[in-house]
Length: 472
Image (cartoon, rainbow, N blue to C red; front, side, top):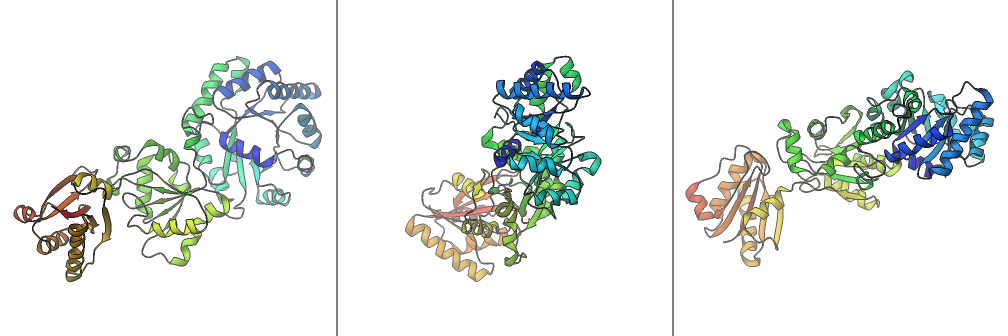
């Protein structure tokens, strides 16, 4: 039951805190929250009316539990075991306390009643861990150190997740939720006392919807849907083919579906070729992403093979999604990310490729060559004699098997590649050169080698290029 409740709170992301003593008002608030997309509500034991007030709050919990079955009902500000008993009798499905009270925790654990005790220090976290609790309330969040403090707790307590409460509002909720060790936030900015007194249920519904849509995590699917929730997996995140140093939001929108951005927002760990380039891509994809809250691992030709396995630890040990970002186009194709993908498969970890631009397939589409039988050969040898020998073999295959041969070169060596093709291949062979695909200087041209010899090379200018040869 603990896991089920924590999972539902994590899906809701926001747990509205409600202070109310009138059961009909509680019913209206819960209904408005549910229509706004919320999956849970915390009804707080905050009253100046003694036992009578507590009894009325218990009535509110009971009413909501019985008449709004679609919402998870919790009791908040539970300060002792006696109050926990009253909440349980009223039908509360989880308990939230402002501090760590061992007697209250023991009471709940013994009855399999999910409890989220408040903690704000490492000592309190350790005390909770000794009770086998791994989902805790971090309170008071803003006063206790805010986002930076809670992020630092992930080091000594990697298996602990927090529901941040205390000073959370529409402006800072996203920053907390960007922390890898925060599973939800609690707050009352959409259920303020003035709104309840004024019985403004429509505004409560609107504020709830706005809060969730601003995070694009609406629990009922009205905004991004459950299919847009990142699952624990290794995500292959394509990037536009445009130069990353001048990448714009328009470049991202042109090349990648919005779905990718919604998934990327939920990933806190990235494996990249170059951290600086990856940060530029993420900033262009969505400026609201808190780049400083992310963790980057570099995987390139300089990475020691023995260190690669630890890049999967957030996924393997803690169930956190991990993303691979290439320098351009699709990761793991002519890209060192393939090593990590293979390792993930060997450990039975899910791998999810996202849709994005593949210059290889785009060039094939635009070439007019055989798209049913083709081979991508990657980079050819750098030395002239070896490159020429490799080209002859590829050309032979193109003619004998009717197979399109596709290969690439580092942009600054494009001219040398062109010269070798023109010098080595027979004049009847078809050659397609695709330059700057999806970029402003995009061009694709297919001609015979003889025609290329007459017109000369295109203006490469260190532009990424795809070369294709086929029998003409």
